Amino acid sequence: MARRRTFAIISHPDAGKTTLTEKFLLYAGAIEAAGAVKARRDRRAATSDWMGMEQERGISITSAALRFEYKDTVFNLLDTPGHRDFSEDTYRVLAAADCAVMVLDAAKGVEPQTLKLFDVCRARGIPLVSFINKFDRPGLSPLELLDNIESKIGLIPVPVTWPVGIPGDFKGVIDRRSGDFYRYDKTAHGATIAPEEVLSPEAAAAMVGDDYVTARDEIELLDAVGSGFDAKPFLAGETTPVFFGSAVSNFGVRLLLEAMIELAPSPVPRADEDGVPRSLESPFSALVFKVQANMDPNHRDRIAFFRVCSGRFERGMTAIHARTGRPYSLKYAHQMFGQDRATVDEAYPGDIIGVVNATDLGIGDSLYVDVPVVFPAIPSFAPEYFMVARNKDSARYKQFRRGITQLDEEGVIQVLRHPDRGDQEPILAAVGPMQFEVAQYRLEEEFGAPVELSPTNYKVARRTDDAGRDALKAMWQAEVFTRSDGAMLALFPSRFQLERFQADHPDVLLERIVAGIDE
Picture 1: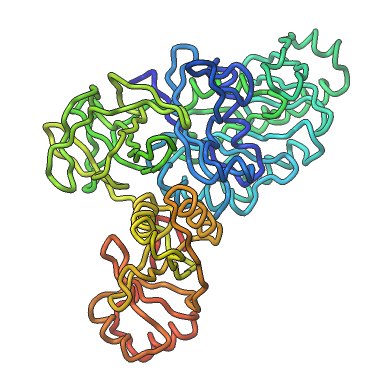
Picture 2: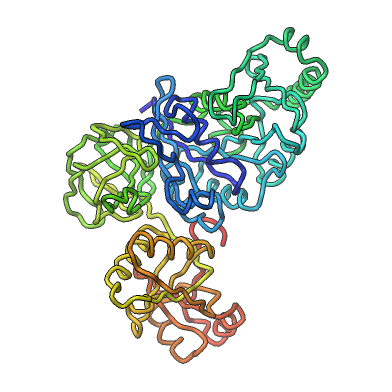
């Protein structure tokens, strides 16, 4: 258990999150060159962005789990989507992480989506490591970036490495822990490990000159104000260790990866739904945090991802599915590497396992052996966008219905149904509009169900109950739909209609839907 490090990488879109993920794999020896995964028969495959739509658009749409080893440490890395429209997926993934690396663009600092993701981390009590990326391009000064982090997210930044040279003229970094200077040389397109030279302070001053002297002066200023790393406030979510580099050029990547061995916490006991921690030495237990279908287009399978929370996992063991109370065989279990997978025989707390053809497992489910446990549910975000889905080919209705159900179970979109419409024209609800594009793409490409999405006039959703549904029948501007988890959602065209109805019916339940963070 002490060898495990399970962490997520989060960032604003285009900050370099997926590039950093790939470079971690490069430095750990999991890939031979950036973009080429070691696999059987030298097959080339994407690492974390494996979905066709991701490769077409060059953005992360769904999260990915990647397991690799480096210096006798087992890393379970969770790459998350950067776009705010997929923040619900990121929220679910963070339920499985013990730590997160926040990637920031040196030219932009903390961006709006970074703030939202930080709020999610804070709500889950996840410590953050910050990586200032793209320092080989023009951007803000390092002191400005530290001020930006502290003013925007409220964490005290504690630099572990410090850049030598200005943004755009990046010479290397000083490791504040040892005082050594790391000078880097670029490689072609950053496809291979960047050669680095470790110099003593005296040798660095002689080679680099004024830029090194300036960096040393800045470090002395940091030392004077006591900006040194301490594990206790970091784990308490009060400080964030900061590293500088360039993922695309591989500058500073190895130092960050090695620091994750030291800084990232190993697994700790997880609290159950009653707030009681389950000891790591307790019998096997796990939390399902993600479901993904059609990762293997040749088999159209369905994988449930779970994090081992306690005990020892053994392939072929039978656990109890807490939601149903039924035995569940874990025979077809794999460790994941993006789209690739390999059979796993044993695993320990912190490890991420994928169970193939797990038709009965859903997001937020708990599994256990011997001693019952139910971990806290993973709530849904409040939907803000609503579209009507219509099947365009009557001969493909079965595929349409199966696809809608699968995407709902994965959390790609939320599906709302009305008793008068049934499954013919469900309402698709989403946190952001890009979720609809993903749903339409996957329905057509994976399930062979051409679909038409039409806008609605709904803008606001509130949770209600049977009494609220009865009261709202008299209001033509609003309707009540049922979500797949049984929740009843009242949809209104605007906040004005909502507030007017609330004023006329103060006793009706109309509850804001909040998923652990402010709406």
